[in-house]
Figure 1: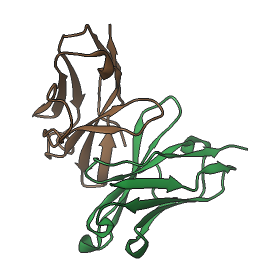
Figure 2 (figure 1 turned 90 degrees about the vertical axis):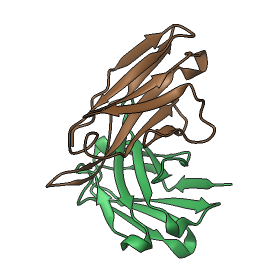
Figure 3 (figure 1 turned 90 degrees about the horizontal axis):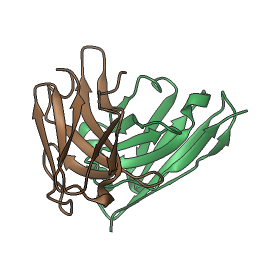
Figure 4 (figure 1 turned 60 degrees about the vertical axis):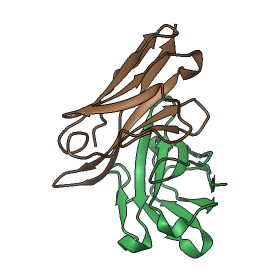
Length: 116
Length: 112
């Protein structure tokens, strides 16, 4: 059974940092591109970024709203995807999901609240 | 990074068909066959309904996707109460200045 489990969310002050993790199981993680997507309170879904697989050089893509502040990485030996979030702003408050590139499997989400 | 354009809401009676549009540009919807549709109930993970105009296994055949030019569409036939949810389109986007993925603003489907 495919599972994606996010962790690491919480309350952080503006300007602070947080690292989210996504633990994957039930499929060959190293073969898949992985995405981070967020949903802000009362608003829609927003794509955050993508980690390509080893076959494509582990390259990453980012939304303009987070580029330069967020960094996506992965550890295929641990079947894990990460989202390092720096210089956090109040508008980054959201539920953060990890998902497979194909969109067929998603985690349950982890809530990040940026507030003083 | 502007979102794809979707109607804010669409409604229909049980058994009717409804269509949700998703309008982009030649840099996203019109330029690639990478448009997906998601059903989202608040508090739950989004569910993939259409991927590249194909329907994943397990998704009802009442859901279908199509595309014409820069506009993609999701049609729900034989509308049922359980279809009431938010629906989002998503597309790969590539231009001279950026590459990534963009969502539509979401459409709230109400079953009357």
